[in-house]
Amino acid sequence: MALLSEGFRQRMQAVNSAIRFCLAVLLVIFGNSIFAYAYAEGTELEYRVKSAFLYNFTKFIEWPAEVKKRPDFVICVAGNSQLHAKLVETIGDKKNNGVPIKFSGIKHPGEAQGCQMVFLEFADRGRLEDWVGVLANEAVLTVSDDSSFVEMGGMIQFVIVDGKIRFDINQTAASRSQIKMSSKLLGLARNVN
Image 1 (cartoon, one colour):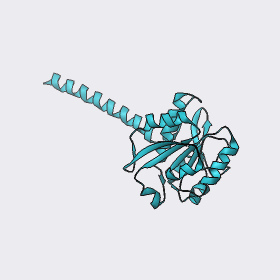
Image 2 (cartoon, rainbow, N blue to C red):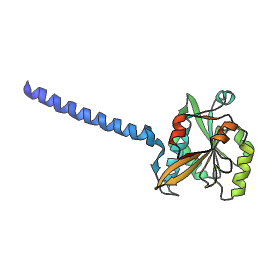
Image 3 (tube, rainbow, N blue to C red):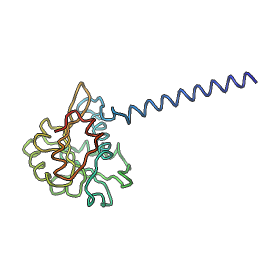
């Protein structure tokens, strides 16, 4: 009987250790560090990390009522086909508040009106400024990794800090488009303008 109890106790310790490990992993994934991923620029990991960010942003942002009524939640990418492909692969068939997430590669600002979020990446800064200007009053969350994106009126800008990807927020631009960001998301941002 003592052997049975000792074996059972050892199995329970192993199970408890596994549970603690899983909880620690979940805390890292879903805790305050959810948005702090290390990455190497230009790699597959970079696109996977950005995809995870874009998906996680959907959890902390509220769009206007007319946008929430749409049958799909659409994340669009302009200027970066590699990121578009990685979004499809990484996020797949996930949902945003029960609404299926779809992905679209777009080429013109007018195509963004069906999107809830647009990631913009262009080598030509003038082109980026044009897109930001066209989308400024639309209920479309704009995201980019351009170094002056929030200054030009974009809403979320990826930045690199100590080899990790972080983000800055232009809350004024989001509010103008009737997009509400949760206090948790604002608290995770490096800077909020």
